[in-house]
Amino acid sequence: MNLKPANSHEHHAAAHTLGYKLQTTEFLLRNFARFALGRGDTHVVSHTAIEWAAQTTTARQGHRRLTAITGLARFLHAEDEHHQLPPRPLFCPPQPRPLPYIFSAEEIQLLVQAARRLGPEKVDSLVTF
Image (cartoon, rainbow, N blue to C red):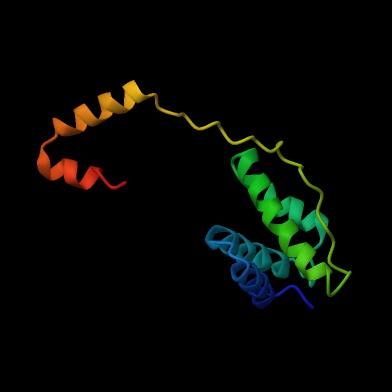
């Protein structure tokens, strides 16, 4: 299986059937496919992936790009081992998700009181649970 935008679409379709929403990832993979094909690559090549991922302004975006390419490379590598698997993580260590803030009962009361001061038409749209 060669590196073509259609193959990145197959990867996206397979992930979508598993419940993943990959709008940004699909955009990145199509962009990478164009970049790699422009260099004459027919398979995922690690140094091309790293070079493309490095063309960003932040390490975090480079990490996102390389993560997307790695997922595609794993998918394609299953059928054609000429596709290389780029190293991970290369640009920045994964950041843990922040802990959610849990409001106290008193804070919830203050929020409800503030919402009531907005007027009935605004409060009705705020009370959704």
